[in-house]
Length: 82
Image: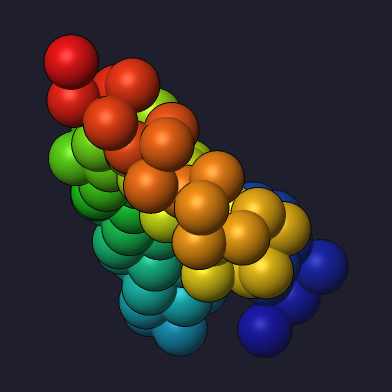
């Protein structure tokens, strides 16, 4: 082992341990990229699956939360159904 042991002839990257570590890092990066890609697709799909809230849904929430009484709920429900 002379002065060119690390940087001479074959170079630093021809050592088996370094190549193995770089290979592991490469595959970890590929797996991480796939994970990010799949997560983005799943989140986008979940956002599209959410239905829009209707006026009747809002009215029911107001009634359930005690913000309107029974008479007002029935009256507004009739208005929405007509």
